[in-house]
Image (cartoon, rainbow, N blue to C red; front, side, top):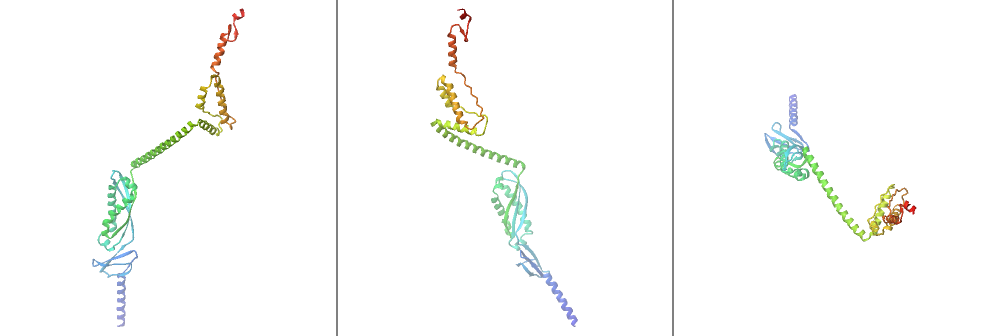
Length: 316
């Protein structure tokens, strides 16, 4: 009798252990358990921790509540301005209602992936190429709204959608590069023209000041000569001022050569104080009136030709 009781107790204990093992479930912190009893969804969703179900009668399905990062495959499309592009993106979403995610859609991950691909192709066709390249924030918001609208009924919340890369054809890349180069060249020319305009205005003001004070032009000339001489050149090109030529025109013919030599020597001494090896070459032709007067005097003397006595003078 005792042996039968012991055997029955062992049997009950084993059956209880088997029942507990088959009914016990552990739900992790980031998961929620959706229980189906005889195929019908129960009201309560099992939270994290240890939980029990009825073996054979209940079925539990665990749903991950973490944020899922899903890459969207690259999609080929044509923009609104007829440019062929290839765009890929990434989507961040999470399940907010475990029961809806299990009941309303067969596979919520696959459904979100397909919806993201179709929405990405749609947003490509509605946008221009410039928007895809420079105005991505607005496109990301529009893409997120397009995906989130049907996903709300699936118990899924779209956190963020980002366009990763926009691939362009090689011909389009070269065209854009040429356009950018032409734009930079245009801006450079505009800047240079503006600089020339400002410089011309300043030079006009300087010319007006120098016209009032002629000595300022001479000082500027001497400064230029000194700056050139500072380079230790053996040859110096000395510009000849126009005012000096006008002065020579007003001077008498006999004094022109002396005045020119005096002006050149004065400019050379004042402009080349530090040069020890300077090459200077000056040439001043003899005044034409003096030579003509000497020839006329020789011609008026009788029997003299070129300063030598003739045969007729000797016979006389």
